[in-house]
Length: 256
Image: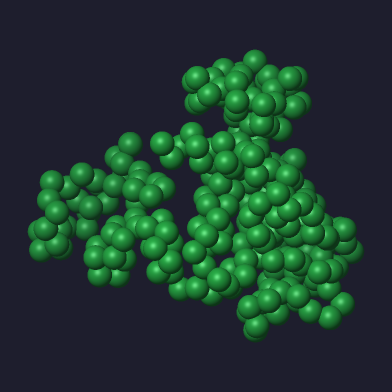
């Protein structure tokens, strides 16, 4: 992009030239390619570090939200339909499209839109987070606590309606800051859930285990047929992971 791999030469490039280079269309770097393995701070890729069991083996609490992909669906132009989702899926997965649609069905408009929202969220954050937990479980000994945030906050007048449990929607629950954004719209169930999540997160920060007296049991995550996921909502409880096949399919397809 800049015509050199010399640190000395890179330091000599004016800041405005650096900004110009990374601001050009197509210059964005996302995913593994944006990580600079410099041999000093990061000796190898994160995947290689975990595969070798060289990560800091500490307890892990990780997860994502039910509607991570809602923004992508609501902003789609023209609005998505079963036909357009089938076209998008076939373009994305080509000869594996049939297998894709078994996991993300598109039998009618409503089902197809929900499936594409799920896929958008998986592609954006869920699959990568799942891979992280799988990597830790493969070579680490410390426990993993996996969650999914299912509570849809009240619609914010400043946001597009219908976002559901959108990306970052859990943050104000975890940190007890419900009053800052839409102070008059929160419901009692939101405040109760915020209190519950704050207790879990505080327990985890103190001991590496989110469980505590009076809290619904949050089992440690162990990949496999009975993997447990804590679902946060008005009725928070742990339940069996029912989407593992989706992530295994994406892994097979994307990691050739």
